[in-house]
Image (cartoon, rainbow, N blue to C red; front, side, top):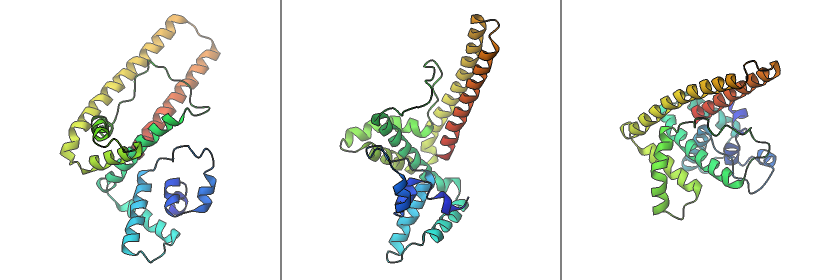
Length: 228
């Protein structure tokens, strides 16, 4: 994808370059939390800061700069990108919490079954759950965003060996979740058969549509996890 199109699509990246045209599009409640930044947006931000340090007097040509960032990002290894992934995950925690405090989204998704299995946390989120209270107690003045950023930095500074216990625990929780989902779906079909031995054609079509929507939501969530 051409970076000239990709970068402006992310408000976080566009803000780095002071794009007035993009910022004018971001209308709405001024109190609404700022959007979450992607791993790529953090990478571009670091490139911008690097450029300012090395060549403070040289103006940035947006098109050329964007192209170089895109080429550099494509050649980076997963390990090199990991620190930006972690920063994006930390910012997502910040964004989700601030959106929760901001209020419910109008016309949101349909209410999910409270008995449905809860999606398991990643290794990074397990780490955050353990260290977030410690950071808050030692730094009570930090904002939610600052705490999330601090957690991302701490996680990034861990060695692979230090991360392993959290990664292993997350893998076990994921296995249990997949088994619970299978049991939940199986039980749901069984209960449905008891209520109506022969449901109407309309009801069958509605249930199939709901299943497809649930599968799409799960795939979207998985894509978000992968991108982060």
